[in-house]
Image 1 (tube, rainbow, N blue to C red):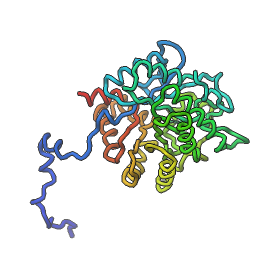
Image 2: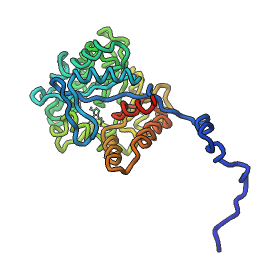
Image 3: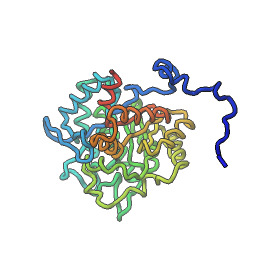
Image 4: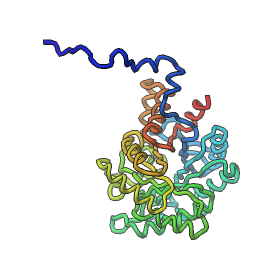
Length: 337
Ligand code: PBG
């Protein structure tokens, strides 16, 4: 006996393909669009002059010295990329148990912030990551006491770090450390120091993810962290509702917008936050996502432009207003046509 049933109902009066027939009609009815205005470009910094270093697990991405980062910032402005996020690879001799270098107003990231700000003024947003992992000898985002990452003492250091970064010219402070209560504390500290206009983009739903591996190689925290993991402060990938709780707390504490990270495996979270919150939602297409896409592209298994632009468009469909992506300059060139 055949399972086939004659189709009843609107067919063929309803033909979904009619609107897909022409380029103009497809374009006219499309619900979401990717724009350069949505992109944030993460950049890795090293000490030195006129130097670039490849990153093994991120083919096509390089660590660059401050002078080249200034050039990159000028490129970003010309491409219409609205903001850059800076991540320092701290020389190993400057790392310590208590991450003193994080609050040094002449550390790598602060010097880069000043140099870029001097050159491009307010035409580019500058994000600074607030977290201790580039500076700790153990590679964790917080201070460690008896093998535990201690919350409240870490928050005190984060407040000082945020102020130093704001003084150096950061427009957006982006706490990525996942300590409890840090958004409120950082907001108060910024306000008391006169930085009432400094924005806070909280990494609100940041998961303890395997997809940060290449980033940790890029900033040199992988070897410090060793076999350690960040599960006592970053979120369990099994949890969804908890992301809403995290985001709600961060907003109550004064975050201007909230981020979900990683991106592509967590688009359900982006979508839930975008639908249930009254603030813009950002998403981070992290280093492991870059590595997957670029690795497949380099093997000829995926079509470069189509795959990258689709991956970014889908963030928009899920509801993200801001997308941190290492593909930013490439995508901007394509989008600018
Ligand atoms: C550090 C930080 C990480 C990333 C951004 N800020 C890594 C981590 O938490 O271990 C990951 C970004 C990426 O993978 O592209 N607090």
